Amino acid sequence: MTFPVPTLHVCATSPPPTNLSYFTASFSGFLALVTIPGNFLVCLAIIKDPFRNLKTPFNYFLLSLAGTDLVVGAVMDTVAVAFHIGEALQLNLVDIKILHILFFITSTASILTLAALTMDRYVAVASPVKYKTMVTSRRAIVTSVSIWVAALGFSFIYFKLGFISYSFVFANTAVFSTFAVVIFVHVGILKRLRERSKYWRDRRAVECTESDKQENRNNLINTKKESKAAKALMVVLLVFLASFTPACVMIYLLNFCSHCDCLMIHCMRDLQILVVLCNSGINPYLYAWRLPQFRRAFYKFLHMKSIVN
Image 1 (cartoon, helix red, strand yellow):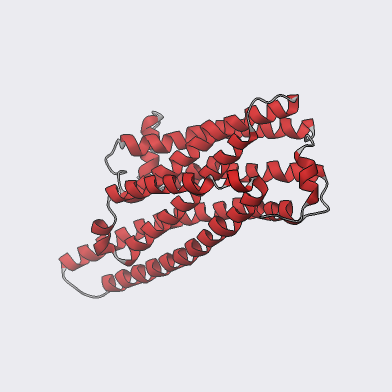
Image 2 (cartoon, rainbow, N blue to C red):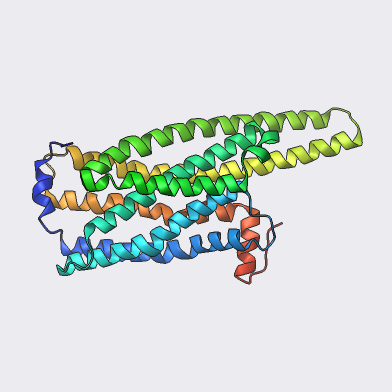
């Protein structure tokens, strides 16, 4: 597969500005400092489960996402720092292929995990009775492992196509198709949650026995919990989309901008990776701190007084 971008061949052998390399290295180091603690806390909370309420299928998918983001912070961000410092000093400290393959593996794993999280919430809302038998912790773990195997397998196509071409393929397959499905399914989740909430509220207003009233209250509470988890996931999806949209725009420019100079090519190359890496640092603060059971676990680990009910 070839693309009409003659400037890319020239820019591949032309070193980027030293200031750009130092900026990218510094920003990658900052992202590592932000990404590692937040995602480590999420992983620790689910694995330790201090209040015995976090080991659920949904949270195992969150564990997979946090684990992926932790790899980004601990491995990819630090590799990026070493690579760009070496680039600035004109030293071959890290092969650029290592940075690229890490980027594609973690990005693919993140996208597929978000799809799995969305499908988990859809089944929980659409078939709440069957959910406990259909979606078990074991199946969630197996699915998470399968996602990583798929991410590893698909990403090695990069060695055949190269960074620019595979970025284009990745944007048009993994990113766009997955997000189209995820957004469509998530709209269905929110619609069903609104219908269920209205149904149980209407039931509560009708005269019935005390046991029926208690059942209605319990069902309404469970619906509100599902709604809170769905909204937290929606925020993650929106921010993920906000990160990948500019990255995909830059990927298109890298492939089709035949008049871009080398400075712009190098800037887009670095920025499209950085905006995606930002997402890994933000994720735990988007969903984990919004869910009370996670906040209680974090307060316990940090020896802080919990202010959550």
